[in-house]
Length: 100
Length: 305
Image (cartoon, rainbow over all chains, first blue to last red; front, side):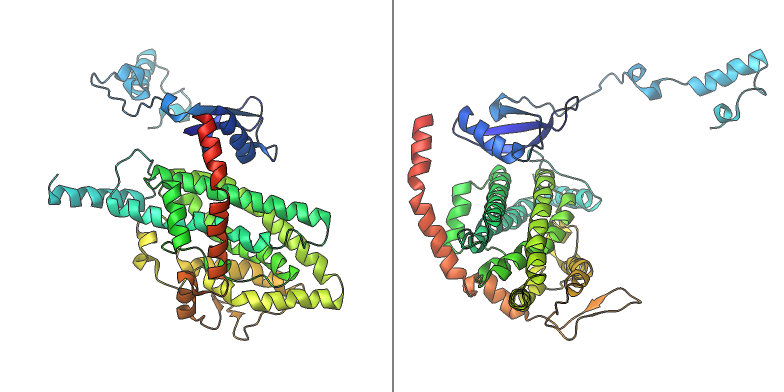
């Protein structure tokens, strides 16, 4: 059986995929993972997950083009410029915000 | 899928990897890419596994307890690398038992440097220092391999190899600061290992003609790897008062390129196809140990079942 091994390098950091080990059962998987990913104190935690237990999602369709959930769905610059023009504050606005 | 669209798909894949794109196990890949990956990665796994045999010979003969422990740890690392690498090959469709069968039958290859005997403790130091240094040059370039699962395990492998270089350098420094006899032990080992080291990165085939480069399995031409090794290590060898057995070896200060006596490439081919001085003995040992430990595998599997 193949186990996916995740390791955490330091407390507070995310557990990241480190590799895989082949083992007949969980006990052996634990021994092998300790040897492969922990014998130099390079990890503070390991997660072992049987490969069959992993569900993978690889497609993220956006059929309805939900732009309001994305940064490019908002036209702040053009609107801000219009608002400043109306208020007569365009000249006084900081340079950086006027560019682009 | 018809021929036309198959070709287009392969070309798109090629464009993708050549632009630096990386591929995961579950992604579509051309059959040729898959078979090249298996061949390359399997040879790497074989080399890690066979590479421990010359060192194993020295565990009991290592001069101090500390050295025995360090050597044993290095051997454990290398076998661990073989396990990780064979797992990657397995996910590409070739089971580990098939890789081991092909190794012991001589169908697949392992690196040239593991086909030679280790005559003295000096050889053990030179292997850990210079052979591992040459290997780390290639392995660092594999961090950019187009096949992502292989590139990822290379991080751990490179990290552990750097310990081996440290161990090897320490062995060498202890010997060159010892008696005249010890110094000569190192010099003789350097003389013996120079030719295999010059062979190590392969013949200077241009990258554009190297299929492993075309598919971006490798990210570096053979000659570039050799130049990097020479540039990093020739000064380190010479500063210890050791000489390198090639009178033509010199660096062009303007171009930064090292010139050297052309290695005998026919000899390299002969060695890696199983006709090196220790090839048969090593393979025979691997066959015997495979038979010897077969019962362990059976016991473990039946207990778990």
